[in-house]
Every structure is written in C-alpha cells, then in structure tokens.
Amino acid sequence: MRSRLVTTLVCGAVVGVLAVPAQAGATSVWASVPQFSVAQPNAVQVTGQLTGGSGSPAAGATVVLLAEPSGAALEALPDGGTASLSAISQTTADAAGTYSVGIPAGTSLDGVADPTGVVNLVALAVSGTSIGVTYLSTPVATSSSSGLHLAAAPADDEPTAVVDAPIELTGTSDSATPLSGGPPTCSVHKIHTYGPREVVVGSTYSYTSHASETFTYSKGTNSSLGVGVNYAMTGGSFEASGTHSVSSDSSITFPTESGAKNTHFITWFDYAEFGASCGSRSWRSVEATDWDGGSKISTASSLTATHCLPYASGSTFTNTHSSAFDYSNGSLVSDIVGISLSARTGYSTSATLLVHLTADSRLCGYKGYPNASSPAPQLVVAYGA
Image (cartoon, rainbow, N blue to C red; front, side, top):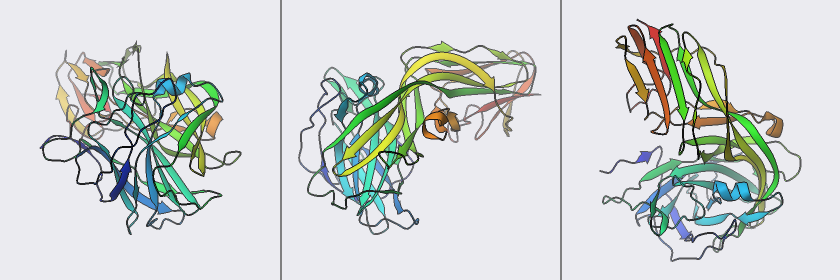
C-alpha cells in the first residue's frame, strides 16, 4: 500500500468538479468537466464534520471546495484588485454532518500551486443563512513539462492525501439561497496590504552548557500560517479558521545558540486582508501571502521532553524529517485581527535543526524519540547526561 497523509476519512457524495487550467496573471476561468463519484480514484480528499453554532451536526449542508490563487498571485494583486476563487468540487453533508470532497488525479493546478507543489484551499459550508469557512493546504502536486498536476492515484485506489477539515457554521448571511445546481461563481479581492509581520518558524531548547544548536530556514520550506476569518464585511471580529501555506524562495541560517538557553527563531511574512464572495455569501480573511525574510531571536519559555536517548560527546544530531511544533501564537498579527494566529514549519531537507554536543548528553523528543518518524518528536530538547 502506498504511503499517504491521513488524519480523518468519512464518506460523502461528490456531485461535481471543475478542472483548473493555467491562470493568466491573477485571474482565470475554469472549464467544467464531467461529474465523478467517490469511487473514482482521487489524489486528494478533504473530509470533516460540520457543526452549527450550537455544536449540533449541520446535516444536509452544502460544502464547496475552492482553490485560492497562488501566493505569488495574491501577493501581486493590488489593493482593490480581484481574482477568481475557483470551485473544484461540491458535496452535501450526510445526516451526521460529515462530508467528503475529492480532487481527481491529473487535475491541472497551474496558477494555484506554488513552486513546491502546495495548493491552498478553502472549504465553504452553507446551510440556510448559516455560513462557515476553513482554510487548508495540501502538498501533493508534482511538476512535469506540461505544468503542475496532482500525483496519480495509487493502484489500490486510496487517495495520496486525506485532509481533515472540520467547519463550524458560525457566520450569518443575508441570503438563504441554496448553493445548488452547479458550482457557484466565487472571487476574492484584496482589501488592504498590511506588510511584514513577525512569525516564529523554529525553536531550540537546551538545559546543558555542552550543546550548540543551529536552525536553518531554507529555500522551499513551507510554513502553515493561521488565517483569521470575519463573516462581517465591515466591523465584526476575526476568529482563527484554518491555515494558509507559504513557501520560502531563499534561505536564512539563524545564529547558533550555545549553552543552556531556549530560543525562538523569528522571520517576517507579508499579510493582507481579503474579501471573498461565493454566490450570495461573503466573508473577510487575513492571511500571509509571501515570505519577506529577516531574522530575529527571542527567549522561549521552558519545555519538558521525556522521550530521551543518550548521545556521546562529539555527536552531531541533524533533524530534517520531523513535523515541527504548532505555535498557537506564532503569527504576531493581533494589531490586525485582534488575535495572534498559529504558525507551523516542518523540518525537511530545507528546514534543518542541527545539534552539536561537546560532552555526553541526552537528546529528548517532545512527542516521540529524537529521530522517530511516528510519533515524530516535534521539538528536541538537550539535557546533560
């Protein structure tokens, strides 16, 4: 069985799909292709639970999966400029409020995928006058001479990725017109560019004088940064609702931290406010569009890790495969949305933590052992022997 990213999988019935040709600039028109069913192999499925404001299941709600323009297109969009928010697929939640929408293997993603193959999506749920959205991303596109495409589904017909995206229908719309009869026409316009804001992209933790730690944030690294959503087009308040992925196009090696100290590594990302409309529904979002660069270090709070192994003096440990920690307040944008948003950077061949030890020591993972893949350590802490 082919390996895949899986969090939750529930059943639903997909009723339509749109193919995605390349975008010209920041806008596009997406052409319709024949309907498909869940039985057709899909490279990606987005699933989740829909709940109303009271927490009860939103049975029968309509869910539309939308693709945002690429980060470069959103960044280039001037204040007041408009681009397509294009519908990929649409479904109806079952009696328990669960849904599943898929993206067929081979769907073209030119104009929406970033250079690393990550696609940012929006799941919109509508039930009467209630509305809810959540933002998510999926890193499954592959590059070929004809552009970026979803990877082919494996032989066992299981999706390459299954992304869990629960949605709370906490917004209210003036319209109760159903989103039925085909995918709606949706768009996004940039309301205001806020410019660079600080984001935590990594951390080191040491309780021994015999450790030196270096964090590198390199070209191709992806950070999943929280999105703030507001269902009022003027006034109202923002709430955290999913994440938007931004990839780096250059590198920073932060200063090496030596001795007993805990450190956050900070860089800057561009943030902007957008207004979105889909049929007669609308909402606002604040999200990151680009990595600007810059480096800063700050003191991190204490952390205890218990999944420990001994490391001999002179050892150098390199973490290039672990998914990193979710910083609940990692994006410092409270001046924009009234709350700080999450930030998460995965260690990879382009985001690396290196620990060098000058005496016998212990390295301890926060969630799993230092070099384990399941569960991954998330954070690694150095202790004395």
